Amino acid sequence: MNSNLKIGELAQLMNVSIYQIRYFEEKGVFSPAYIDANGYHMYGLDEIYQLSNILLFRNLDISVPEIKTLMEKYTPSESEQLLQTALSRLENKIIQLEGVKKQVETVLTNATSVSPSTSQIKHYPKRHFQQLKYDEKAGDIDLHHLKETMRHFDMHVFNSDIFYTSINNATQAFIESPLSDDLVLQSGEYLVQSVTISSEAELEQAISLFEKEPVFELCPPTLILCQEKSYSSIFYSDNVVFDIQAKMEWKGGEDIASKSDYLA
Image (cartoon, helix red, strand yellow):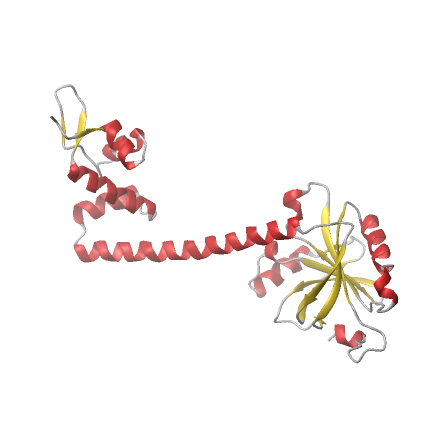
């Protein structure tokens, strides 16, 4: 009984398509043990090992022409160097994918935590912010300045929420950055409310309602911060999610904070 495999059987064993095996054969990096009288390509154990190596190289993003050169001309030391280089690329890709994984986890956590009608108390550590240029007439941030700021601080815009507040009756915009002291928020307990809005008027109304929270009768806020959630465009086409937040500063307590606690 012939123990060799036909191309369909080999494809099933190696979990690849017949077309992929034929492609490797066309490019000269793989060949059958022999072709029988009926024209069937037959493969033995040596070909299984050879195909396993080719698939490993492809998983390492080594191109088919490189694989052909490697198999025909490379010395053992050259093959080792090629694999070391490919391994370094793979390790960098894993680091990038871990970053993407954390980003998706953060997005999902933030998305599921949105409860528009409920306020909650969160503890924040001391936070530092870099100011962005804000055009009052246009009602938006200067995107060129945002780009330069992101480049300077080696940040990605999708990972960096934009914060808005009003200081001296003027809207100001910030991004969080430990390297800047443009705005400093002290650590402590913050009242936070997530809202989904579709216009600036809705945001102003939400802020007005937020200021009337009963807890602020005991600890009136000195500064209200609106954090625009960068992920919200994934879930909403016409709405934006904001976290409205203010530090809870109790009247008569030893830890009363003044405006100087917020502004460096």
